[in-house]
Length: 435
Figure 1: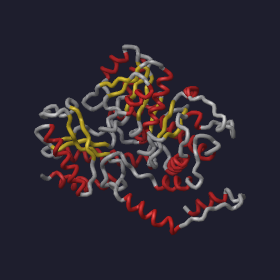
Figure 2: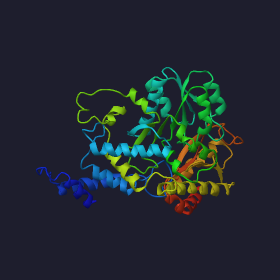
Figure 3: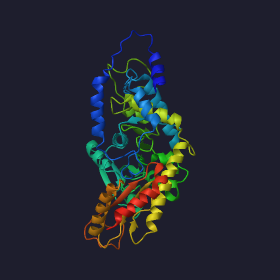
C-alpha cells in the first residue's frame, strides 16, 4: 500500500508542498474508540455468519478504495473525478459484456434501490401512463419506487417455487396497458429466479419492456454450475432491456456500489440536462449527464475497477469459481436438511446460494416459535442465521395454518468459505435445534 501511495504522490510532485501533518496522538484514542464501538456487530466477515446478504469486500477493493480516498474524487463530472470516471466507464462496460450486451448505457449508483429507481424511471419515460408489473416476491422497493414516480404498479402472484405466475402475467399483459415487467433474478426472500426465458417472448408479444432486478443474483451469470430453469433464465440476459446489479453483494465491493445498465444507449436522451458550472472541462461524457444522482463516490469506481482487473468477469474465472462454491454450499445444506425429515423441512430447492427451511412442527405458530428459538440458540453458539416469513399457500400445504404467516430460517451462503465450513454450520445448527 505504501508503494502505491508513493506512486500516487509522485504524480503531483511538481506542486509546492502543502501537506497537513497527521496528529497521530490525537487520532489514536478516537480510532480505538471507533474500534471498540464497532465490536458491537455480528461477525459479518466470518463463515459462521450465514444469515443476511453480507459479503466482505475483496482485499484489493478495500485497498483501492482507501487509496482513492487520498484524492476523494466525485464521479458526477470529469472536473471532480477525471481518472475515476474513466475507470467507472471501463468497469461498467465490463459488466455489460458479462451480460452479453454489445451496446449499453450505464453507470454506478449508491445501491440497488437507486439502480432500480433509474430503471423504472426510464420505463415510465418510455411508456408514460402504463403499468409496471412485478411478482409478490419482488423486492418491496419496486412498489415504493413506483409510488414515488407516480407510475401505476401491480403485484402478481407466484407459483410454488416463488417465481412469477406466467398465466397471471399473460392475463395482465393482454389488457394492453403494461409498459414494463420487472423480472427478479434472485429474490431477496428465498433466492427464486423468475423464468426470464419464458417472460421475454410474452412481454415482446404484448409490446412491454423487461427490466431485470439482479441486484443480488446477477453475478451468477459467471457461474458454470447453474442448473434447470435458473440456467436458462441467466442465458437470456442478453435480451433484457435494463438491469440493476449490486457489486457490493457478489461483486465483493464496499457498500455504496450498485449499478444500472440499459441495453439501448438512446435512453440517455431522457437524462439530458445542462449545468452552468459543472460540465465545462471536457467535451467527453460526464457521468452526471446520464445519472439521476449528482455527487457519487469515485472511490467506488476505483475499487470495482481494481477488483475486476484482478478477477476478470469471465465464466470459469476465479470470481465464477467462488460463486460455484457458494452454490455448492447451498445445495449441500439443502441435502443435509432433506436427509433429516424428522427434524427439518426444506421449503424451497435453492436456485442460487440462498436456503430457506424450518423445523418440523404441527402448526404454523409452533414452527414459527421454534424457528425463533433456533435462531437465538444458534447465535449463542456463534452461528448467525436469519429469519424470514412466508405466507399461507406458498409452501407446506399440509401444515395446520393457524396463523397466516410462517416464520422460518434463512441463510445466504455468499462466502466461498461457507462450503468448507458447512460441517461446522450443520453441527451447530443441530445443537441449536435440541429442545
